[in-house]
Amino acid sequence: MVNHRDRNNGFKISLHCPCCTFVPSNNYIIPNKSEELEARFAGIDDSFIHGGDLKVFKKRRHSARAPHLLLMLLPSYRLESQSRHKNHRSKRALDAAYCSKNVQDNCCLRSLYMRL
Image (cartoon, rainbow, N blue to C red):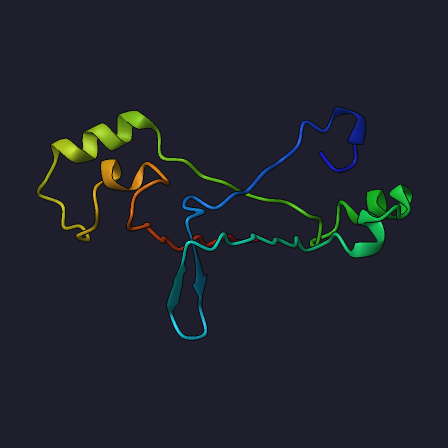
């Protein structure tokens, strides 16, 4: 938690495939160039991050703009049940075994959507 810095164990968002850089303006992939991931969260401004007043943050924390991140993960038993039921219509995609490592010649780029 940001408001308990002494108990902060860290939070890391990293790229699945650091072997290339994606340029969204022209949908181009630059091979063999690592991409840096930058994230900003609503409710936390630079002044707070660089030594701002914690009391001000605690007052804002209960407002609608309080910083938060919601991550969802499909449990493994649901993945297994979906693979057994092939009658559902689904998107064609690369299988998980192909995209599970970040050392392939061809990287898998997937969109990440977050509601903050």
